[in-house]
Image (cartoon, rainbow, N blue to C red; front, side, top):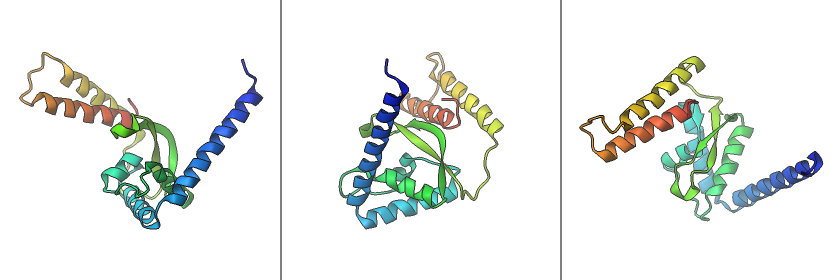
Length: 167
């Protein structure tokens, strides 16, 4: 078993490697792509209470011309540094197949212009989404929808439950 000093040295090295990789990705990203990513993050932060990287891709950000999707991380850090968003301490899995369902940070908007769902309501809604997904998955349930439609609905409900804190 290693002592805490070794663990701290390893963590510092891991943090330094992460930061170095993010700096390289940001340096190699084209200025126009970064400006487009920043604009989309800004728009999303103003129109929804939380933002994740999948939201940015779904909003139409073109792939980074350098081929690296990791350049989006520094754009989120930039948005946090300017007071647009902050980390929630929560994460959910990425939807992009190429990302292998790795965790992505959920960022809280600090400039959201809409109505936020109270935490107690979020928890109740999460439980309802989770229960609805389980109910729909029952093989005895006769739905008119196709199997593919059922699977899509279950996926949406599970994602909603996860986003709301029940996943």
